[in-house]
Length: 153
Image (cartoon, rainbow, N blue to C red; front, side):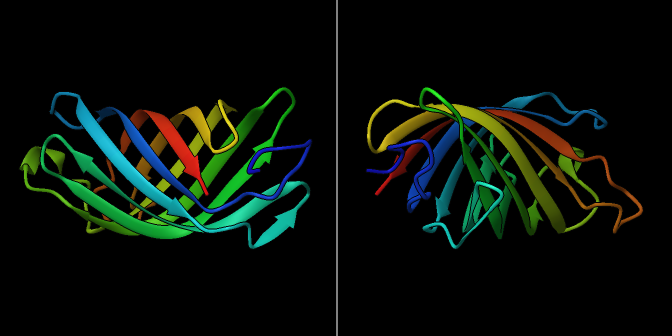
């Protein structure tokens, strides 16, 4: 059982997300975004937070693609609620010049809140931000709001 008890270790999971992105500082309109993510079993637990390795990709309606690898965190709350987060350095490829984020290197950060809906599935709402962290002279970043379905096994 994945989420049973007050604090069960995070299990392997596939996470699928859909939402909308916001290129705040760029003159392009907001568009749909989809994402897929894989998280390993918990590799360590620090202060009650399960930490795992993760790989993810996002696909923007503007035909932009980002893919990265990093750490994901999961913290169970009461009544089947949880908080999730991650930081993943990765590579960004844009087709539309209006969605240029300044470099190929972009770090995605994510924070979300969700609720278990069965032993193996959960829904969450998450906010993401992609930025090159100032490693390029141009760094407009892009934000996204996602609804995510977690399927743990």
